Image 1 (cartoon, helix red, strand yellow):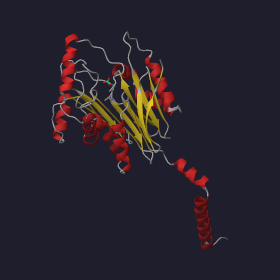
Image 2 (cartoon, rainbow, N blue to C red):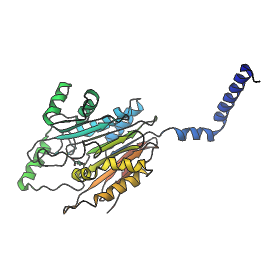
Image 3 (cartoon, rainbow, N blue to C red):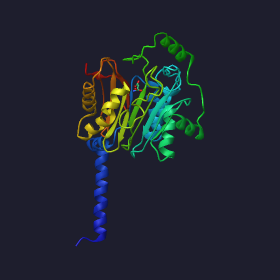
Length: 322
Ligand code: ASP
């Protein structure tokens, strides 16, 4: 019969043999490396500064939730960015209204819609998620909640955005832009080395929209969806189209069935062609899965995504259906 001593000696030997094997054998190391989840940040459009900020936050040992929030706050504070936060183009009444949401790896979600006078809508959304039993706060109630939680009230309408609105008023034509050159409405999703996922999405919505209009970006399942078992997806473009097809949720569900993120984005884009419309529109989707695979796909050419992995940062020209 094996004594306890023999058993322990045997165990010690096999452990040290294993350690020796790991030391000597590059193959074993690379197998172990492959099993480690790959950290990654992926954002809509050419959002280089946002993705860098997000990546740096992750490298400082902060959570993936902190990382996506940090990324989303960059365009929110940028007065040159006319689709998000401060400097965002107003609605047809000259009022800047913001929509944002956030989701963590536990499936928690928070969102604000039709928020005015607060720059960092994504951080208010995070507070809704963490400090209330609710998912969405709207308008006046969202503003009051933000002020109670220490956010500062400020005028988000920059002189540049006011000028653009005044020019728009001369014709008052409501035509959503297909691809705005500095169209940085940001959906940002990421995975850390523990395989934890999070995502955020923030926008001032379509320029010169009808007052009170809310798009897809703050709607969980449409503009953003994160499922720790599967992956995450987010959207940009004509919110009405994304809402009708529940874009982000559909992509995650297709990935759950085993589809690669890029294929799932493509399938979700294909579904948009069922929408009856006379005006052309653009939608772009991005997605990642827990294995560290990613994808980006759009309806029309011109959509870009920004990716950061251990290999560095790259701006990707997404493939499109048309
Ligand atoms: N999806 C946003 C909205 O419809 C707009 C955008 O992505 O630019 O509000």
